Image (cartoon, rainbow, N blue to C red; front, side, top):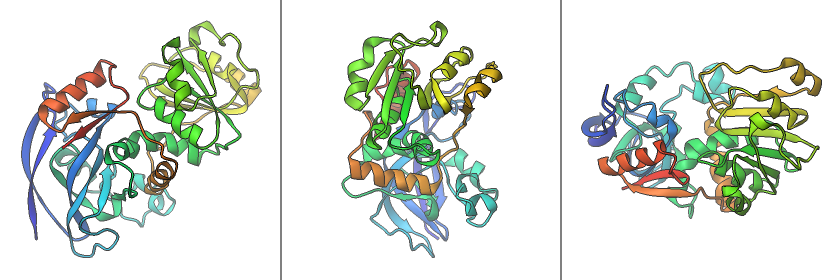
Length: 336
């Protein structure tokens, strides 16, 4: 059985200091060894800094070795990997298309401690890697595996139609991708932002309308009374003022809070009932959704706006600081 020494970058408990360690990973049946070339950095990684977990779940790399029984990929293939390490393929979530919630992933938690996508490589289960379409750059593919997939889970799986008026609240790591993906689908994209600063940028990404909007101040001036069929909240969801959000919606519209807060969120049910409004959480993307997304963005040449950093301890520290300070534009990608 082949074994590989891997240098991995992780936080340190309890300080959160970034450091590099060497681990040894054996290649078993059904697994592949991936030499990592790129990894996205996600806000979720910030929550892992004090846990000791290896960082990263938006990895791109080249397969350098395959274990016994692997037939879906081969040595030399460029693949993505990250959130889901292993699935059984036989439980109800797997059979129902929600394989990311496989109930038999007994090794999942242990693997998240020892391996991630920020390092020299990883040993991963072959049935949870994704072939990257030829010609689609690795630095663009990495953010699609989590940020892009989070958005596409809604656009592809929640009944969004090209004729729908889709609102995007917030222009950041998730929001800029939501604008580009919804516009690529042909939707009527309406962007809501707290200031004028990003109007030109939003329009260049494919927005049709732009409104300066503060939920605490009510419906924005000049609002189109047709309302929104779908509204994606891509920043921190407002813990208050949900009534104003409901007033933005069309009859039977849906609000998707993608950013969360631990604060209690009061919601006026009578306002929801009179317009038939839904508030819909978004599942982590399944393998099927990610494969469809990669095909879609490659076909339509939709790319994230990325900021590159070296895949070193110093590079990870720079990227984390940019993310913490809100200066990332818009997805950080570490490059080896």
